[in-house]
Image 1 (cartoon, rainbow, N blue to C red):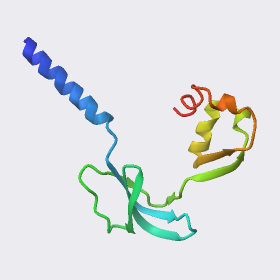
Image 2 (cartoon, rainbow, N blue to C red):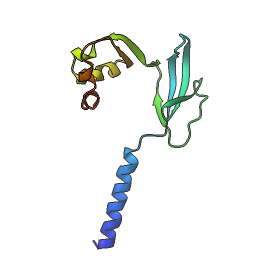
Image 3 (cartoon, one colour):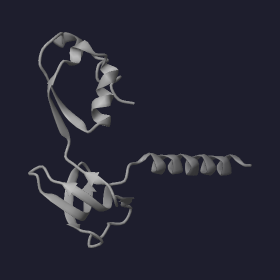
Length: 130
């Protein structure tokens, strides 16, 4: 293999790895039951998420997906907004326990007291999630 061929092969491999590492710009969850933040239940919906925002909620199979969209089959599943834990004592647990909140749908925590300096430690948020 010549130097030029090896260089092209390395560049091609690097480009492929970079493309695999990029998250999709949009995600379409098809045929999911949506529990809206206001209590409404929307059965058999298609939910398009672009970036970090819900862009559209349509009736099932009505949504069109932009090119490069990751499509997830949501049939038989539910989609709910993030839950709030309004009375937590996070300073009494390790930072690694924070991942359990997220795994169970809790996206916001109100800490009701304790050692707040421990929660502000530089490593606290980095070790919380994998």
